[in-house]
Length: 460
Image (cartoon, rainbow, N blue to C red):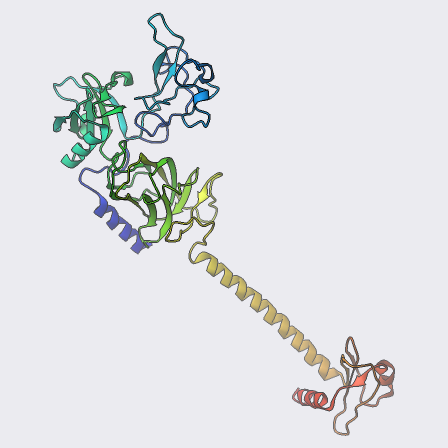
């Protein structure tokens, strides 16, 4: 384990880019959304406005007069149904719902859901300009997206990136947050100039992210966190080749895919043990991961993602946490999949023994069985020897037709008789009249068999 731990630590150091975070600053435990616009929200908030303080939502199965209703989502892809929970079926900037039409003609509103902010998004902050909320370099772009700003600040070596007014980008460090002033989430409501489905801050308001979101490499050592596909929340591009080293405390890793949308089978995510390089699992556009958590046993896990020349897709959001290794009483939680080693082509297999332990247990069982059988055979042999030493007349089973006869020898004081289906040993000498009664129905062994038995008994 010492060598494996050393190799894992070296790998973590090699994959750590300048400015990369050792783990998410925002815990994924309470987050209900992993897409920047909350399109994956499946929670139960059913009122609009800040923290649900606004108007009640209409039920989706009663909104047939509008563009979106449960009838327009029969497969449930958008999460619509016989309920009035906030959803984002059209890829808007955040979840919303229909409301009873007002006199001003307003019939829908956004929902402000505190738990529906993707991990890595730190919130909305006031930017008064003096001093700036983020003290690093800045820039503007008419094609600004969240990832464009993240990439800019990542290349500059900063930990945080802030988007403002739909077109401005600012960089900073964690120390800037100590004097930052949070603002209501609804005030970061400006659509990004480069993506109609993303929000880029507001007027004098910064939406701040960790630059590790959507990075192409990095190491992750926090007890829990989220790893996103490259360029997230934008789609990943073609010919991407990215690696992440995952080494939280504990020898067990629990992985849960909250989002997995790869374009085709040639876009592939591999999970490998960094110490041995062995492939543990592999997923692609045709073979997505199973639902529920995956459990892997590895000191450091290496994730490799590759896309082909045509690859474009939303990507993935992977939640992880490290677990302590209680080998003796450990068992996978309900609805989880303990993941064994996978073949090189990524085909999922059902089970694989942990190296060393089953072989050792099997060897112990075989040794115990052989020892027990040997003791029984030895006891049987000793009993037979004692019997042969006491008996002078032996009747053994035969295969031919029953017949009576005797076999006498002037040199040996024993005779052998047999009959189907069993043999009988008599305490008598050859020719003894006492043998005639029990020997009825028996016949003598052949001369060669008697010769062999004489040799055996003479050696006793």
